[in-house]
Amino acid sequence: MNGFFLLGTDITERRNLEVQLIQAQKLESIGQLAAGIAQEINTPTQYVGDNLEFLRDAFGNYQQLMGRYSELLEAAKTGAVHPQLAAETEALAGELDLAYLTEQIPRAIAQSLEGVSRVAKIVQAMKEFSHPEIGEKTPIDINRAIESTITVARNEWKYVAEMITDFDAGLPLVPCLAGEFNQVILNIIVNAAHAIADVVRESQTKGAITITTRREGDWVEIRIRDTGTGIPEHVRNRVFDPFFTTKEVGKGTGQGLAIARNVIVEKHGGTLTFETEPGKGTTFVIRLPMQETA
Image (cartoon, rainbow, N blue to C red):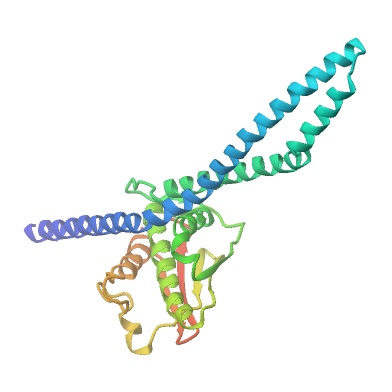
């Protein structure tokens, strides 16, 4: 009886450590991404501010011109429009460049709305990425979860790679631990960006990260392909080992893929494999069951 009790205790402690490790890595990831996310929000916020300043000045010009038009209208009502008043009004319209304002104001409004939409998208993505775990799988939209993670990680990949997505719009909801699944996708995207950065440093041309989703029978398959350096043959059997990394000191802890494998295989009953070719790139393949597994 004591043996069973000790075994149960060991399993519970192990699960608690796993949860703590994943949570610690999530917080670390958010910390690392914070500066990039702040920059992503700052850019659209800045041009929204610039456009609002332009609209404020443009409205002042319109007020000034409308005041002169009101004078002209009142004079017209009494039938006493003085040629000088008409000339002054025309001159003011030219001075304030009414044609330019009429063209640029709609553009400024459209850009501002686009900026606000961009900020809202980033905030929503961050909210979805940081989804609090409730300890149980819930049906999630895999495509949306990946899109949110791509948005959150944008500053990690946008300088070195184009992001290409090819999602199966007909995928059903898949039972997942949403926060942990998002972390897996983030780990693989960041790894892909780092692998491509090593190539870009030499070629000065952007690479590509391609993410596809497909239904394969009772499974959903997610493929994340990069055009990076590939994985050398002598380390391929260690890729998922805890604390193993080929990155330079300070750039990786070696926990990302180990945690990813634990989440996908142990917690979701799925598979995580990879295909690689040195100098060509690597594709990580995630397969998740569409039905809850014991």
